[in-house]
Length: 382
Image (cartoon, rainbow, N blue to C red; front, top):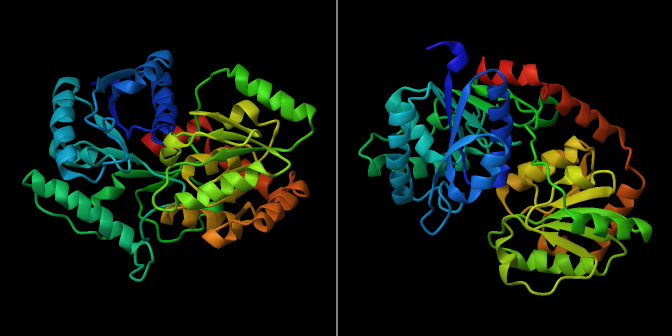
């Protein structure tokens, strides 16, 4: 097969935070004449149609197909393996591209002897090579355990959770960061820094524009709030919403994956809420970003040089928030009792005097450098 017709099958977890960077890569490959096909949940049909990407769309069973809610369930993974295997037999790809939680992709890459590129996060989740006492070893052990449960359900031999040889890295692992921020040493040779891989759909939200304009006319500072998925501390966010509602500022709230908000009926009048909000659409008005320290929100803020208040509710969110603090790019609230009016007031005060902070501009430039199209292709698909 000619190189110009090389085929890539994308097996991506069914959430925007995973799909958007994959679409960025897919568009780059398409521009170079490559053939791209996604396997995804059918709820994303419009997303693929509008953006010119072929997709085999599958129905979910309780959760979306390739959902991040049940990625660790071996029975779900076994069913997904069988379905995607049929697509591979028909499409006959030359390579696979997958998100880090798409466990069937690792099984199928091995079964079909296909090279696998993994789209990672901003923070590398596993220990480096030769780090026996790394605090990240627990995560590698945990994910290896889930992967082995899937392998056992398919009658496959188990694998070892070794930082240098684990198949969960892939043949190439795209770390959505830059060396200046990561600061990690002893990373496996498969790991490549690729910047943020940011991509957002072009859309116009007139209600959002009117809210931003009212905030501008009232000369109130505007912040973006990305709550994200919660695991066990929804009271912390309930308290945060109450405090923000009493503050002299306005908040644009992205409700994507905000599972605990489904039954929430009353929000402060200084909130604008929507299931998806692009920071790019309001970047000229937003003073800062408040989030749970997850990759997509953090990378979008850094791309636009916005200071970040991380209020993490997961270990990876806490790791990334601490890294931002160490590099002078934001602040963090790590404990329930720290979610106080005084802590928020301090963050707002810091933003007021540092909106043009040199560190933010410097790291924005680092990320832009790594996101150049040719550099991305050279590092990702050389």
